[in-house]
Length: 407
Image (cartoon, rainbow, N blue to C red; front, side):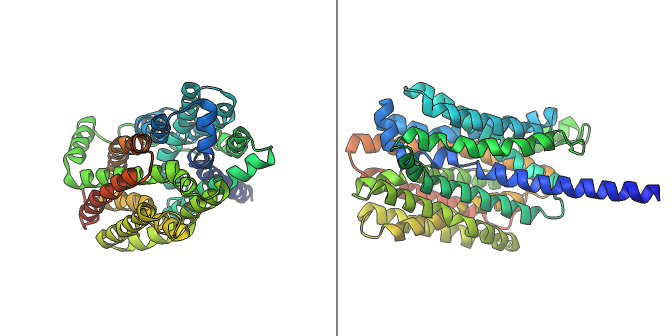
C-alpha cells in the first residue's frame, strides 16, 4: 500500500511537471520574436526620437543575427554547467530587463545595447528549447516542436499587429508600445524558475559519454561536410530575408502611402501565416526523405513577393504579405532539414550549432546593406532588387541541403 501511494504521488508529480513544462515552453516561445517584430511598426518614430540614421536602423535589424550567432553558440556550454532550464530562466529574465529598459533611454547606443541584452536572452532560449523538448518530451518531440513553433509565430504576429494600437492607447507614445512587451516576458519567468528548481532535469550531455578526441573529430567532419555548409548557407539566407521583413517591411508599406496601422497589420499577416503553416510544413517535410521541392517552392513564393513589392507595393499589399509569409516558412523547413540530415542525436546537436552559428553570421550584412541602400537611394527599388538577388542562392542552397543525405 505504501509503495502504491508513493507511486501515485510520483505520477502526480510527474504530470504536474509535464504541464508546467508545456506552459513554460509556450510562454518562452511567445517571447522569442516580439523584441524584433514590435520595433518595425514604430521604427520611424523611434528613429526620429533617437536620431537614428537609416544605416544604423539597418544595423539594428542585424543585432538579432549577431546575438544568435555569438551568444547562441555559448548556450550548450552554459547548459552543461547550469542545466538548460536554468539558462532559459536567465534568458527570460534578460528579455524582460532589456524590453523594459530600452524604451526609457534617449540615445541610440544605449538603445542598441539594451536591445542586445533582450536578444541575448532570446538567443540562449532559441538554442535550448529543442533540448528541453527532447529531454522532457522524448516521445512527443514533433508535436511539442510544432506547438512552440506555433507559439513563436503567434508572438511575432501579435507584437507586429498590436504595438501601434498599444502606443495609441498611451497617447501615441511609441515607447509605451514597445515597453509593454516586457510584461509578457515577465510572465514567462516564474514557470522557468519552477522548472530550474525541479530535481528531475537532466544535463545536456553526460560526462564521459563521448571520448574527447572522437568528439573533436566529429566536429571537424561536420564543418567539412558539404551538406552542413549547404544547410548553413540556406539557414543564413532565409534568416537574412526574415530580418529584412521584420525590420523593414512596415516601412516599405508606409513609404508607399499606407497608414502605420495598415502597415502593422500587413506585417502581422506575414507572421500569423506561420502559426498554422510552420506546424503543417514541419510535419510534411518530416515525412519526406527529400525536401528539395519544398525549398524551391518556398523560394519561388519569396521571389514573387519581393518582385511585387519592387514593382508596386501599394497595388496588392495583402498579396505581397501572403507570399512573403509563406516564404518565411523556410525557417521551420531549415530546422527540420537539420534534424533529418544528422544520422544520430549527437550529430544533430553539432550540425545544428554549426548551421545556426555560421548561418546567423552570414545573415548579418544583408539588413545593414538594405538600410544603406535605402538611405543612399532614397527609395526601395535598389534594396528590394538586392533581396531578390539573394533569393536565388537561397533556392540553390535549399536544393542541395534538401537532398536525401546524412552526416
